[in-house]
Amino acid sequence: MSGKRKMFIYGGIVGLVGAILMKLGNPGNMGICIACFWRDIAGALGLHRAEVVQYIRPEIIGIIFGSFIIAYMTGDFKVKGGSSPLIRFVLGFFLMIGALVFLGCPLRMILRLANGDLNALVGLGGYVAGIFIGVQFLKKGYTLGKSIDQPKVAGFIYPIIAIILLIFLVIRPAFILFSSEGPGSMAAPIVIALILGAVVGMALQRSRVCTAGGFRDLILIKDSYFLWGLIGIFVFALAGNLVLNFDKFHLGFMDQPVAHTNHLWNFLGMVLVGLCSVLLGGCPIRQTILASQGDTDAGVTVLGLIAGAAFAHNFGLASSASGATANGKIAVIMGILFILIIAYGVIIDTKKSNSQSKEVKING
Amino acid sequence: MANIIDARGRSCPEPVIMIKNQIDSDPNISLEVLVDTHVAVENITRFVTGKGYNVNVEENNGEFKLNIKK
Image (cartoon, rainbow over all chains, first blue to last red; front, side, top):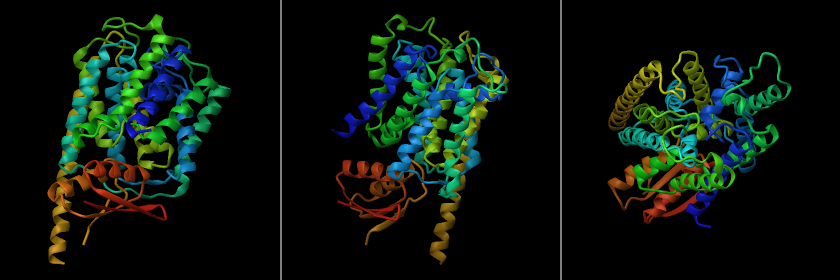
């Protein structure tokens, strides 16, 4: 099987899982959304108090288990980190802000599109624009530096977190919050969600599918390899929805589930997501996979995503079906400017250290 | 003598960009690239073979050396 066909199939597995999970009870066009699901977990842990989006999503637990197990078996489990952790945290934080103004991560953007939500097309335009801007920084030498070996025990932190979350999900202690209405109350059965999450984790760990990588490689090195994974997600999710969720399939902009029609803010929210994803080296799903296979930098990024979700819901930055909030609009603009300044600062510093090392070579 | 690129510890897509910059500056260049992840090996191999280069990969204790030449 050719590489591109393999990517198409791997992506297809993810898209199909999205359609199945929506059929089995997950919120509209949210079969599997990494930003939304980490946000729901943040809510369940009491990090924010938006009562309609609090649930420990077993899909995330499954993804962590699946990618950890397959990485451990194949030799991809390597515990590394230490390359600009604070910058990664901030990038993860603002990535989540952008995602919650748009109302979904890049994966949900594809799933929304595959169920007829044309607002996701506007988001896609913003995402590609953000990736294009990020690629310009990569071309100019943007780097977060080298990661180095970390204590092996650090690589087990995410799998342990997943086990603890699973225990909380099953025994439902009083200090864990569960939505009784809204998207957080809509869920597929736990065991099925856990298994399908693990399937997604395995497929993504093996394939390295990354929504940012697909467009980034096309722009940067004219390589469509990863893009075929995204096409696979879309095609299989579309086919899955037409078969399983035909009653919910609705082509257009208006009255789409957990979505709004503020085109400018759908676009700019995803500009921020695309920019942060490229500067991080991967989208939220890729960061979650990497965190599960021992990459402690990706682990810090996921903590940034969780903190961003908490802020977004505690301070009224997250959009709702009625549209983007004033605070959310300000946060997106501030986020884009802040991230551009950080990226520029990294380039200035990298150029300075490169020229210093050249001088040392000449003098030495 | 081949030019050596040490891309160990670099996250995606930096190893590919480091090689692209070298190839762009001299298409006939021979490179010896050091990386420490399977994903970097896969990405670099796909990129350079697409450009018509030959790649030989050696693994040693979890690290990889890629010899790239026309």
